[in-house]
Structures are given as structure tokens and as C-alpha cells.
Length: 426
View (cartoon, rainbow, N blue to C red):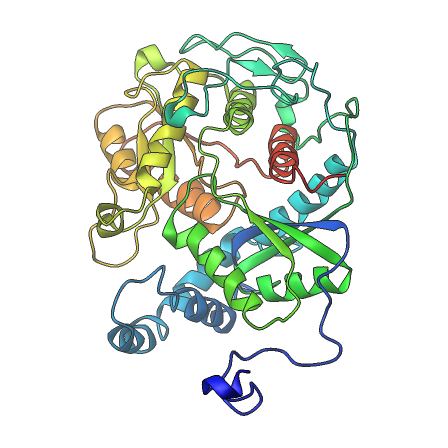
């Protein structure tokens, strides 16, 4: 039939580079695969490893919108010969004994989520609590609803600006707790893995591993609460590129973003309040400031339709509402500028410098768009911005840890899984 229409058989005419081996993993079975995907990391804090990582990362057309031929020259001649050595020193300054921070936290999140998903799901009568099945607030930006100040186990009022938050059990040591067991409504066979968009474990390797284990349905959760083409869209691209090489493909779903998810906002609020339990609360009436620092993107991307700054603003508004703070007390800023093009403003480091110059005695910084501590939070915020604040005459600088494996964050992930696998669970 195809020959009569002028098409040659697939074996003799150009085709997709399909993996045509008898031992190709079979994407069949009732198990549900959950893949948490973060950005990636060098394998070690050395220039050669950093160079490999940066070459892959900075070759992504979603990340760098410069004509490929021109950018290749710039990358190979102006960036890769020099930047890896500087970046390797920064990585080494925050490297954990057991590996890269983002790798360690991603691995631990996957393990904690797998454990949480073995616990019974909350029943429908677990009415409205954050961490329960029906928790939805009202009036949050983006239509998702603002959390009503609830915490796992009961409601708590939003704190008065400048006042100490209500005590959280174990907060003095900022524990990474796991959600408690809850009453069942149904269960599922989940297999949880983590992957990296750049570096390893790669998305392709993880998908093949799941297929080899008989996983026929996969939910991909990008580790980015706010959507951007530079993060979430490039994960879509990588998944699609992998599947183009496979004949037997799984059912597939994605979590696009969750900038005002009530559980996510509550997890951020708890992390901030636990930090204040240890560090003392800022005196907002006296001029202390809590910065909400998001990763930046080029302004031209936002002007061309990337919704990232809008979703960041929605997160900021929901978190301020939960904490009872104003935009002046809790401004939104952007960090991690790369290159000479205009990026989203105000820049975190410029804001930190200006606050110090104006006499601000204390600045706290939380990074809502980073769910795992990494180079950008540990070194850029925790070292560079801290030093900038001190040199400019500022007083106290407090970095709020990322969500990592905080129990409320793992509960958020578990709820995302259960929500987005509805219809798959039997």
C-alpha cells in the first residue's frame, strides 16, 4: 500500500532514528512512574566536569536564543575556555560530602516522595486542611486559591508582621520531616525516580529504566513551581526527543506548573517561619525586609510571551498573603543574570546593596522558585549576596533554606501525584 503511494519501506528510506533492538525496554504494565526532573549539575566540582555540563546546558536553544552558528563560536571561544574554572571554584565552596547539593536533594526528595506515596491517601472528609485531600483556599492570584493559614493538624492564623510565628515542633533544627500516615481512600503502584535535564541521570536513561521495569504510565513533574520555556518547556523537549527513538511508548502526563498551589505556599511559609524560630523574627515595622528571590530570565523572553514573571508574581502575592506582609516588606527580585542582555528586574544583588545603603538592619532572602538548595541558593545568595550586603554597610543577613525534603513540600508533591494520576489509579 505504501509502495503504491510512492513511499519506500522504512528500512530503505529516511526515518526517525528508532532504537530497533530486540531488547528495547517495553513500556507496558500497570505501574505508574513518577519522574521528578531538575536542572542538573556537574559530576564533580572540577573545570573539566563543569565544562561538559555547561556545554550541554548552554547549547539548549530554549535557554539561549542566539543564532546557533554565532552562539557556537561565542560558547566555544569566549565562555567554555574560561568560565568553568571560575564556576568550579564556586561549586567546590558548597559541594556536599556525598555530592552536588541539587543531586543530593533531588535524590532525597524522590526517596521521601516514594515513602509518602506508600501511605494511605487522605479521605474526602479530611476537610480542607493543608495536607488533606480537600485543601483549597479562596482568592489567590491565578485562580488557584490562597491558603488560609492552615498547617498540618489544624488551622493557625497568619502571623502579625514583625511578630514571632507560632511555634513549629522541631523548628529549632529546621528538620526535613515526612508527612504522617493518613486514612486511605485508594492506593496505587508508584515507582518514583529523579532525573536531570542536563547531566545524569538523564531523562532518557530514567525513561528506559522505567520501561524495563514494566512501567506503562509516566507522570513527569518538573521541579519548577513557575513555568518558563527555559525550564519546563525544555523538559518537554527532552522527553519528546527520547520518545522519538522508541517504538513502544508509555502513556504520558506532565505537571506544567503550580505557582499558587495552597500546599506549596504553605510549605514555603512553614520553612520561613521555622527559620524565624531559629534566627528570630524580622522587625518589619523597623524596616527589616524579606526578599523573594526568583531566578531571572532575559527580558526579551518575557516580552515575547514567556509567562514566567506573571507566575512568579502570583507566587509572591500568595506567599505575602499567607505571611501577612506587604510588597514593601516583602518585595520580589530576580537573580542569576547571565550575559549582557537585559534581564528581569529588580536584580536581587542590586536590591540587597541598595537596602544596605539605605540603612536596613536585616535582610532575609527566600528563593521560592528553587525547591532544592543548589549553587544559586547556597553560593550566590548565601555567600555572594551576604558579602555584598555586609560590604555595603548592611547588618544581619539570613538565608532561608529551600524546601528540600521538608514534610510540607513532600506532602505537596504527593498531592500533585495523586491529582495528576486520577484515572490511572485502580
